[in-house]
Image (cartoon, rainbow, N blue to C red; front, side, top):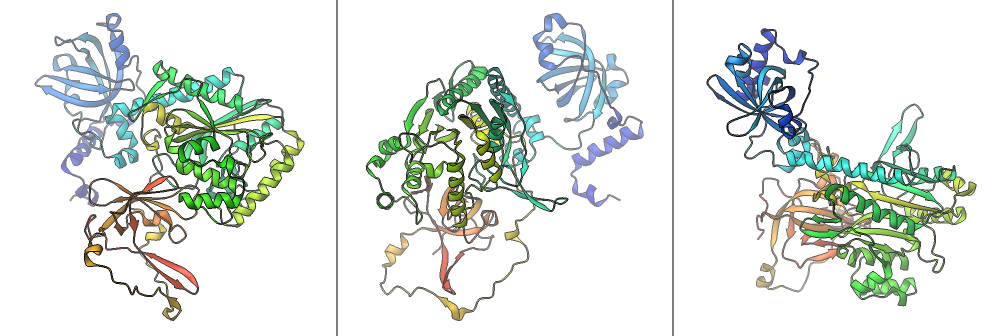
Length: 630
């Protein structure tokens, strides 16, 4: 009788397991093979055919196709370099030919034989001996359609790499880019170092960390969000040029440009400033492009981008004036800045200063327009807690961000080395954290102590390596250039989607609702509003916003819809993924935090115990996306 597991397998999977059992019964268990001597690879054989013709080679790889014609068989063998044809003939192989008859697509075999060219002109290995070394018990996607589902490709990258050769090429390019960065810095006399990933203070950036617990020390610890502060300590200690490339971790939203763990590089050079860092940034990008393509011109998603130095340099205030018409050189007070933000429809929070509003204007009006490489300089001190103040205007800092294709690729400072100023800025950040900013920079007293020991004038630079690789390999998503991107496990629901639904008890005598409208609306006017059922494909927090969640929605049209909603304090992003909601879909598109929002989600709002209470309207998941509400 078949086991429960066997019943779940289709006939082809059962057949593969039966073949494996037959092999084991015959004393030919492929999984007992430990080693096979490989002398050549597929492309190597093809490139050196004249030298290798009729010479014996030993190759190994995965069977990708199989064709039998009586007493002969052809196999396509794929190894680490590419594919090559194997010719197997019963007269040559004898009893070994019977083994080949049992081979399946996906099996891993070794072949010893002579190289020749077929009458059709294809370079081939004539098998003299074959050895099955691993029996594939799964079925590879068939060759014509392959593995195209993006979600499945990311979850089963090992299959993706087997059946989509172009994917493997992306990761080979990734390796070349990372090597080119290291070689460039090594040649400039930089020392590669390693600093802690676990620590008690996650500093060096404004971001939310992952928190874990050290059992032996009974101590809460955090995964690093940046390695900046440790690298600066090394400059204090006497290393003049240091860099570290490695993983950083930020407990924030996920989208095409953000993964919770990502590869970053930071470098610091004593007696240099942010102008030196600009030169290094240009040369790192230029060098990587030349290494890959022999040119500085790259194509990204249909846009031609030239990485050749020098890149454009522009102040934040000047680019805001250029793209929004607002001249912050003429706006001197916080109150004036708040008034102009209100007039321009820029979302700000109570108490924001002129400097924070300048940074918000830049995000709202400028970032998306910076397609060709551009250094934006002159950042307000309020958003640059680790950067040296500009001598001529202490309200701004000696800092730049590098933008390409509307994305930030690099961030650099003339590093703040005044311990008194640094402590005051940390204290200011603590006040913002107490006011609810979860990404405000924490206090790091040991780093202050290091600055008091003495940090020389220093230039520092951070580059998002993953994003750089996306650009140079023309890939639209960070998941396409990371071997194993973070994915929600299949069948796993978030805490917010638990089967046990907790019903909150409400004293309805304490509920206050807005009075009903007395003014009637014409039925024809009401009909103009297009209410549709939408499915939440993805939901993520909007960086630097305390209120906004960004929804990617299926509205039944076949085109994904993006809607931003200010409900972050009521729901976590993850718990809303997969939910069925209601949206008005024919409102004019509106930018929020620089992101276009294409409609509005419907919520129920009331006042309960003198606080606003919000419930997002959720429907039965059996209602299809796009269903119209009447």
